[in-house]
Every structure is written in C-alpha cells, then in structure tokens.
Image (tube, rainbow, N blue to C red; front, side, top):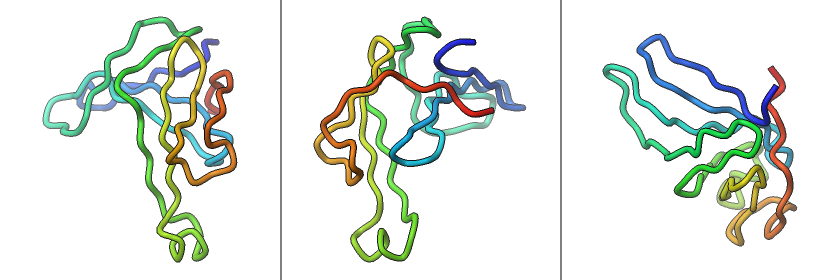
Length: 106
C-alpha cells in the first residue's frame, strides 16, 4: 500500500487521499476532474510512496463551537517527497512542523 490512496469518482475524476493527524480527518487532492465536475486540480508527481502535489492545500473548517468562535480551523500544507509540511497559518498544534505523510484509514 502506498502512502496515499487513489479513488475515482463516478464521473471519472481522480482523487488522492491521506490522513491528517492534527485535523483528525482525511484530506484529498483532485488531480483530474470528471465530466461535469468543477473545482481546483493539483499537479502530482505520480509517486504513491513519496508523493508531491502542487500547489499547496488549504482546508478550512468549523469543527467545534470553540473553533467557530475563534474563526474556524485552518490547515495549510505542502505535500512534497512524501513529507507534509504544515505552514505558518495553520491553527492546529503542528503549525510549522514537517512529518511523513500518513496513509488513509480506509
């Protein structure tokens, strides 16, 4: 099993999933839109063991009433060479750290 997991949509789109420990959820990169799908598309180096995607990935969520009151939860990262680098504008405890990418839990 690779460090990331590929999934296709019914419309033929391609997604790559990984686990984000500080967010306690999966994050996903779209590398191909299916017919009728819209949204951003990332470049991928094709290496499932040491993946790299560009540009950065930004995830904003309101997880709890506390997060919502503080403006929400923000996770901003680069995934390069199999390493997740959490950027300085993250609102979680791993801000500024780099860790190996974790495979999805499914």
